Image 1 (cartoon, protein in one colour):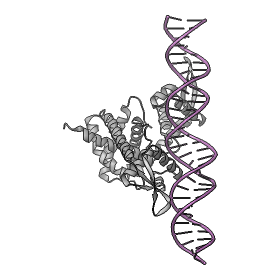
Image 2 (cartoon, each protein chain N blue to C red):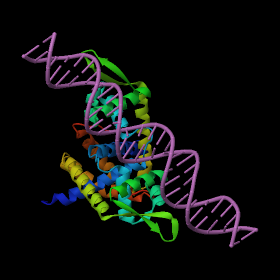
Image 3 (cartoon, each protein chain N blue to C red):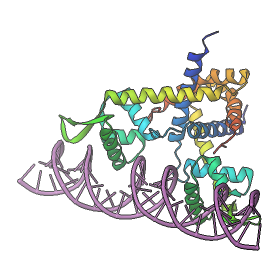
Image 4 (cartoon, chains in turn yellow, orange, purple, red):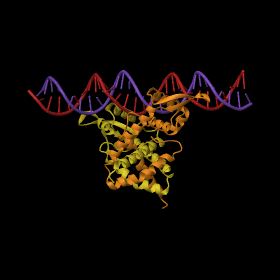
Length: 147
Length: 147
DNA sequence: GACCGTTGTATCACCTAACTATATTTCGGC
DNA sequence: GCCGAAATATAGTTAGGTGATACAACGGTC
């Protein structure tokens, strides 16, 4: 096996097509990808600086300012002071924010699980066998988290 | 095995998290998901009515009008007449549109293949084994296509 | 201990891309 | 030939992104 390139690329292409399809066919108008990811980060790692969040989520600081403003307006997060640095803003997830995140995860997983039922038992087994690996891949990313 | 729910949901959740991560960590500013998917649909299924495209892509008709206008402006698609119905607009992909689609696929697959290198050989094998199943799942969707 | 460059956030002007509601043109049945 | 329905376009709103810039607070240097 000294020709990994083609097979690797084909696998990657299939995964990419699947990812796009999954996102689009379970599209959730309630929370955008960035919004959901940001809430998930706050849930996983706790309160953080606005600018740190921006870096983690791969958006600019003004974008994160606007996003946090929307989250605050909707009661999903709150701005707080950093006692050690009066310039900084600490963003905290509210209980309502956690609820929304849980609801979204349940909703999306349920929808996608329904789609998985279309697979043959063999294919479903293959996907289940790979889900751990995909999950690990998702979490090896040094910068970004999941939804 | 009469308790499929938990395992299925866990698999679905892992897939969903992976999908969101894949989309975000290979984010492509050149073509949005909808734009790419629309071009792919035109490439796969040929010229179509604007409103049919809107239904297929799961966006409203005004959104598709705007998208086609952008595609036309960028030379990726063209509006044409339907000889049997003068109200209708037939959208056709140009050669430039096909080129852009090919380039995007290559670019994204390459990027994602690089990320797959982070996996252990065992995990990578599992993912490769599942890629066919995921690909079939992507294509069983009666409404939507891939990217 | 005042100065000054750096850092953290906000604001501004701008763009893309989605939505709903509505206008306009054409089709097709009666 | 009329009139409702269908196909597209337009207008107005919102979310979400950008770079440039303003401003306040921090922290090191002399």
